[in-house]
Length: 189
Image: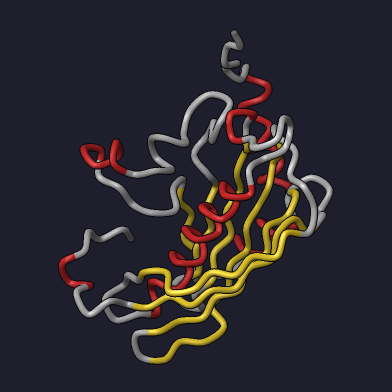
């Protein structure tokens, strides 16, 4: 039976070290309109157990740390850095493609939320183009940018990259729609 490995202090600091020096993070931090977070979607403590990325996918050897997130709520763009552990694999040693879809969906949705009247949307369409396999124990980032917004609809493009070698891993585009019942949804930003 395999046991989960809890990252040691050096491994836990690896993501912070990469983010502190990463050119994309430095470019975002230089903007006046940036807010930094350690989550994509705001979640009340009592609701965390019902949030996929805050609970089920979080923990040692999975999403072992909360992401480093830089949100530009004026332009509708977002930059998020993650560590992807071995429990997120599909094939041994390779992160499951569905995991990347989940992270892209959250980041792309959150990028466009500030531009919509109700500050929330649901995914109407998400297209992914897988470019390279993602190895487990990778440090990655997602850059999501809203390319258009009209009424209750927003179009977002994103790139999922290796944070250490810069390889493109997944490209995505999506359509996000603020539902007519948005006022009854839990606020996540």
